[in-house]
Amino acid sequence: MDIGTISSRYANALFSLAKEEKQDSLVYNDMKILQQNFLSEPTLKNVLNNPIISYNEKEKLLITAGGINVSDIYKRFIQMILKHKRENILQLITYIYIHRYRKEKKITRVSFDTAVPVNEKTKDLLKQKLAEETGCSIEFSGQIKPDLIGGFVLRIGNYRFDASFSSQLKQIKKRLIKSN
Image 1 (cartoon, rainbow, N blue to C red):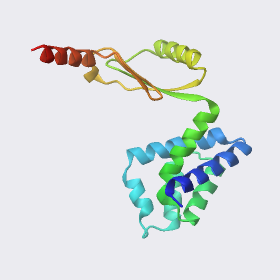
Image 2 (cartoon, rainbow, N blue to C red; image 1 turned 120 degrees about the vertical axis):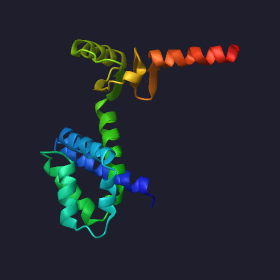
Image 3 (cartoon, helix red, strand yellow; image 1 turned 45 degrees about the horizontal axis):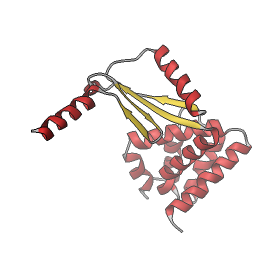
Image 4 (cartoon, rainbow, N blue to C red; image 1 turned 90 degrees about the horizontal axis):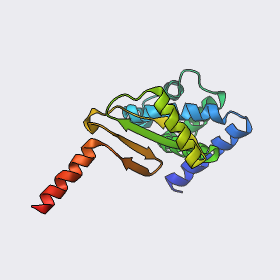
């Protein structure tokens, strides 16, 4: 059996249980924090795959990596993962659970990167317009990237709209080089 199938089964079982217990939102938040920790701390995966590290240490680590106040379902799930020695696929399980939850709850991820800080009123207006257009809830994130020079880069799901000055300058440079 391949890793994707196994991961999907674990993620779907967790999702079903969390939904049945009406804790799917809590588990979603725990899984998002765990996913962020996997991304920000690449050594986390190495620690989990290390056979020298005990079950109890891994359990404490993963419960801490899930956030300050993790749900009971999340704790039990982590214990089951460790008991069945599936910690090597936990990162993939988190991705699948998060994707499943977003699909079920009709949540669209939006990333809005700008060259300068944007006020909350503008962000709220953008969220509202995007929610109306997509018919989905919006999960909004963004970064300040001075290298954009001005303008913004908006990502909605797999769609990317680049209205940054740096991008426009690069296009102008390409046209000038091509015409010479």
